[in-house]
Amino acid sequence: FDFFPQSLTFILMFLFTAFTVLASLSYNQVVIALIGLVGSYAVPFLLSNNSGRVDILFAYTAIINIGVLVLSFYKRWNSLLISAFLFTWVLLLSTWELADNEVYFSAFLTFNFVTFATFYLSFIAQKLHQEPELSTVDVALFLINSLAFYGLGAWLINNHYHDNTWVALFTLCNALLHFGVAAYFHLKKVPSTQLKYLVLVSALSFATLVIPIQFKGSWITLFWSAEAALLFWLGRTKALAVYERISYGVLVLATGSLLIDWYKGSYNIYLLSTADYVTPFANSLFVNALLYAAATTFMAYIHQKVKGGGEYTDSITLFLNIFSVGSLFYTFFREIIVLCDMRILQYPNALDNAMLMEDLSLFKNIWLLIYSLLFASGYSMLNLKYNKQKTLAEVQMGINFILGALFMTLGLYYFSELRERYISEAARGYQLSLWFLNIRYLGIIAFAGLCYTIWQLQKFLNLSAKSKLKLELLLHLVALWVSSSELLHWTELYESSSNYKLGLTILWGAYAVLLLVLGLFKKKKYLRVSGIVLISFSVLKLFFYDITHLDTLRKTIVFVSLGILMLIASFLYNKYTKEIDEDKEEKTEEKPEEEPSVEEKSNN
Figure 1 (spheres, rainbow, N blue to C red):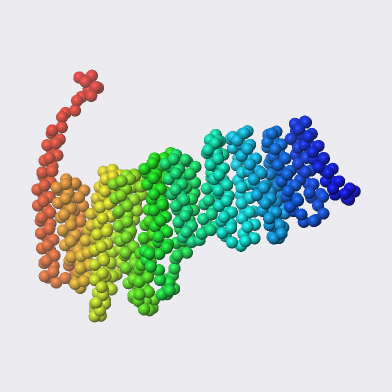
Figure 2: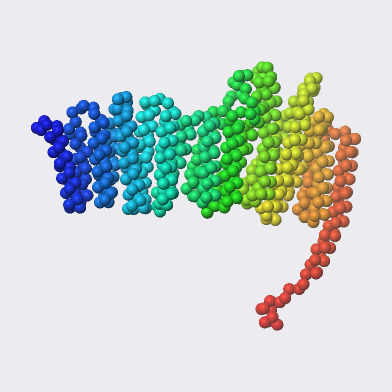
């Protein structure tokens, strides 16, 4: 109210503040100190004459903070420290609008650092000399102090220099500061493990943050992948759990970055031009994705070699395999797509040629399916030979079944479409590439490998006898399905008018005899029954479908062929079933009589 000069008022208020501090010490009451704290922070605002000297305000507040923190340290008044912490950061945030002025840049940056350093050092000193255990409030204050200092500092530097390099350098300095404190704790063998981990986590977090600030695109994925692998290796081999746990977070960041890279690298095939050409298997996205897969594979290898993870070992194994194998699979999967799409640019006006686009699409889908079959088979065999993970084998079994179903439906359909294209063009006098016909055999070979892998997986998983029986019957059904498809393929090529009649009936009859023979020699009743069912179905098909619209010669050929097969089947069945029954009777007679039970002995 201008009753006193400003200087005299400042002296009086300083004396009042000093009096409250002495009173709080005399009565040992923190509430009196809090009253004095409120007055001390109010002094600059009550005496302000709008001169704009924020440097004096910040210097005064810094001096007050140091005094308050010394008082709270020796008297162990945490509420005083928390109050000073809140007052100071509120003061800094409330005046932050002045930071847009170039004149106040140095003052704000300096006070931001002084405030952070004051509370940072007081926090560490308190934990080293008084209470080593961390509470939730302690962790919250530490993180708020560090993040507020970094956030305000990064915004101020970016607003002043307009360059990410300076922000990245500021972030790196934060990381080095925390690393230095962590190294000091390690050298001095500080007993507070929680404090060491908190500082170390902060250091690694800022170091991780440097990467997306300074670098762009695939470089972020590359550095984060390398960091995750390094942290996991240190954590697992040196038994430092905090490193390992942080590596999981960094791995998630690297995975998200890779997904973003793949999304940005996507394209529309109908908008491609010669300038958009991408070299398949020799582009930056492929290399970075491959390095990410290598990093995750390295983590999976270390996890397998150096045991750890506690009760979450199986889950860690599963997820590391998903990250490593999934990324490796899709990396090559995507490059196959790129390879097929880039071929379009080699044909002039390809986008206007519907037939050509359809052919290229069919070939692309077939190559992707063949690659998927080979990859799944190879990965399953690696697990069976080296890892021997049961949970992973169960997952692989399910994936292999899905891929097998895709081949039996879409794959065989794609092959038939290519065959029809070859035949139609040949009828017009054009000769297409033999790949239109022969690529089916690459697919069949890959599918046969997948079936073999499924059979090996069921041995490893030691399925029940009932499940094994169902699987064996399913594989026989698959073999008959593929054989029928192959027969139709050749009859279509030779323009047979009854390809769904005579040939299929004879093939099914022959396979029925094969099932009977296998059932007899391996003494498996379900195979014999399956053979009888199949041959019965073949006979029904013959009488109700095949003989319609057939001439006498073809009817004679079918009936004679099927009759011979049935005679062979009946001869083998009658001959060997008697031997099987005789063996069973002999085994039954050789079994020793069971000893009477205790109850029977007592009755006797």
